[in-house]
Image (cartoon, rainbow, N blue to C red; front, side, top):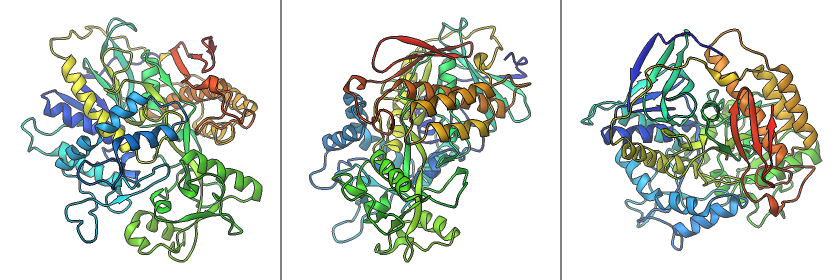
Length: 550
């Protein structure tokens, strides 16, 4: 799609796309390092996924961890949950930097819940979540950790207390295309953006950091906000970067069931509720996780979600129940969950909470190193949009906020280190936008993905979803935020379906009912390489052959 000429231009050293934990951490660090930073976000700065993170931050604090816990043990738990696809070196590197990243966040004003009891002065409260073998998750406001992290970062960004002043924010603008100097082969030269009135702008910058979150909105029911439309991965693919592990979409097992046909973002029931002793039961009161895994209700999320899905199919019901009636002080410890339950007439102190799985966290994304670098010079990614090697085939609970904090800081430092001399930006910029991709109807994409690519996929369902989306894809008459988002969702849907179709095994949160066993020949990532002219090229996980996917 060819867009109109830019109606305005601006310059920066670093453009950060997204205002969540990874983006704002990077922006603050870059500002403190003396870079001119501009943060771009589609909506208000607080409209992303970070605010909805309930559980906490998994970290082995140097001065306040459970006896016997260690970073090595945290690494072991992460690798155990990851289905053999996490990068051990990346896991060790990111988790080892966690204590320093959390300390930096606290210096920026974040306040975490204190430990209670004798001898707890100055220590932080720790909880345990699925897949963890120790209490190592710090939290804020009971179950409002993401909201506190976001508050602290945005307050620090707006503060004039820094010698560099507040971080510049451009809200209400969607990122349309990454600019590369010298056409599609040179380094990054900036970013095209579009406001809600259709006015196109050009941000000239030698570095762009994508921190846009995931693509949970590909599914009809999700814990993600409306902004999670996969924009960052689509931007990176069209810019020539590589994405991996897109088939691994984690479905959170305990999302509040609000009735048949519920669509869009649904309230999360944090895993910490099970960490405090709640158990899953079916409509007859039978334990769901008994005999399913040694950790039972605290098993990794892919295990619990799959078990819940099997029980729903066996009983012909739409939800199971999380029985937290024996937990003391539920409303105080989990105020966010309590409020969501109260809104549908459920009192967790007296009633089991109706829950069912929903799309939650994307384990794959743009391939980066542990400093956020992609394969395109000047293009970085951090947070859920990135595949840093930390998560593999399934994310360990509460590792995501930690990843955003660690890699966000590192990416800013990498940019600062690489912008040591003048870098010439392109004098003329091509205005061909969206790289030959066209959108399909959003509702159709969500319905097709929910039918064909949710928990329990098979080849026929994946192919049918791909065919339905391809048949519905058509050029858009103009350029708007909705067109940009729908084009990204269409690209990501086809990428997820292609990767899921290529991986003919079950591993982590990718469950193939026609290939139920894990196959060791697939113990490596599947890569999407190349994205031009409306086509993807997929390299399979089991072989080195390449195939075009329209």
